[in-house]
Image 1 (cartoon, rainbow, N blue to C red):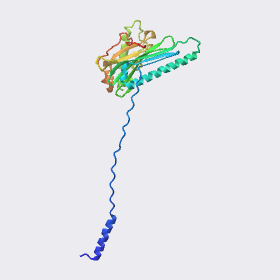
Image 2: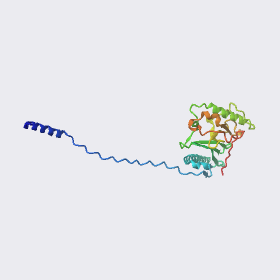
Image 3: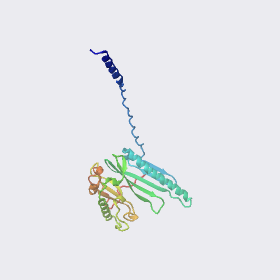
Image 4: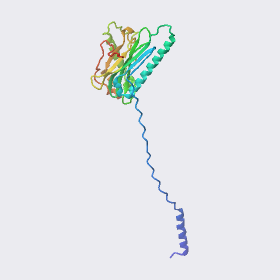
Length: 281
């Protein structure tokens, strides 16, 4: 049997053990799941008109856009806003020039007109082209072409160089455009042969337009718009030459190569004259 002294020692050990025991940690309250408020989608661009007209004593300006552009709201907004801003700047310059003339000579109102057309639509690419006309009272009015390439997947405008691989040999496209100009000149009466003054432009010195294809939903090639004075005198006019997609297919960037195929639906006129005309009312 244990002695009284042993019982005392055992009691002391139990007491010390009880003192060293840590209190139980209370359970943590359950964490409520955080509620993430979804981000509001970017508002769609407000619909823009398909035309713009402004006329006063100093200038007359006008813009026409194709009906098809309404199915691409961001493209529609960008082009309408950009074009109308340019026309308003032109009209403001005309007003300033008229004021500066101070009635010393009869004022002939300036004019600026721009008409856009759908050139080709092959996902993800949308191609637009334009003809513009400008008269500021000089020896003769000026005119030329413009173009815009839209990436529908990225919802943004791209420059023509984005169509091609960074390492592409663009001399192939340069030669194709030059050959087409030479051929067109043989069909244009009185055309000036290419020389030191009127030489072939590089591909990126022309206005490149996506050309429709004989295959539905594809782009058949590129149309190069060349303004007066580039490959001939002003009297010779503009040139519009078409290069089939097969000529530059190997140069295309992978993201856009699939949009091209077939042959150009409209190979252009043999003498390289413009195949579309302005029809501003």
